[in-house]
Image 1: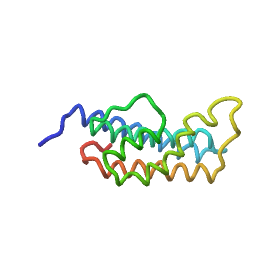
Image 2: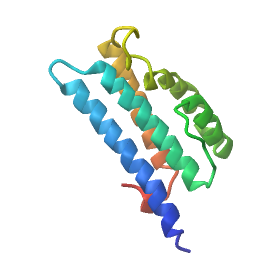
Image 3: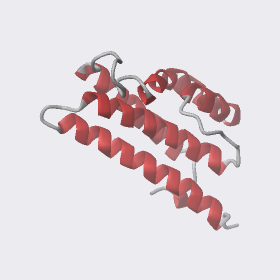
Length: 137
C-alpha cells in the first residue's frame, strides 16, 4: 500500500535539510582556515533534523526545540534500538547555541568538530535505515 504523499514529502524535506547541514559542516571543515564553530552548529542541526524526520514519519508531534535529548527520547520511545545512539547525540545539543554569540567560549577543537560530524552522520544514517526508501533524498 502506498504511503501518504504528504507524509513522504514532509519526511523527505527534513532529511534533505539534514543532509545539507552535513554538507555544510564538511565544507566548513575544509575551509582555510576551518570554520569549526559553524561546523559544529551544522552537526547539531543535522542530527536535529534527522530526528525530526523520524518523528514526522511516525506522526509524532514535536515542538520548536533544538534539544536533542528531548527529540531523542521521543524517537527512542518509538524504536528502543535508537536509545544508545540518542544518548550519545544529546551532547550535540549545546552546539545549537555554544560558539554562536559574542561572549561565548572561543571555538571547538578540530578533534571535537571531527567527532561531532561523525556523530551527526551516525544519527542521520541510523534514521535513514529506519525509514522507507521512498522518503530518502
